[in-house]
Image (cartoon, rainbow, N blue to C red):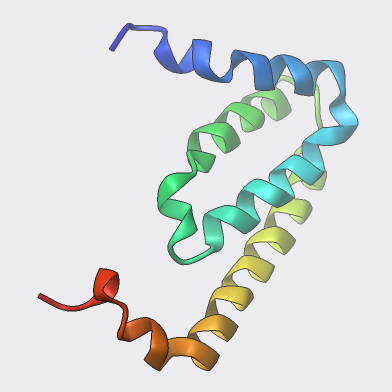
Length: 102
């Protein structure tokens, strides 16, 4: 993997946030929500994106307080949804071969 792989991967997203700062809080909400969902979080590189957006907050380009509130709400709703799905469909989900204990 090249040295600047992640920089090249996330540069377009960070450039978009720099150009449209008002989209940063909803993006943090969505990333935290997706990162909090049970199985889906394994397939989304949200942690690296959140760190990159946090660097923009450290540089003073976006409000850390606002990002924190949106992220907390997104994560809370994601965990709540995962809990609700597990509570309602837990037995059926356990019967899926993908989740079977070996």
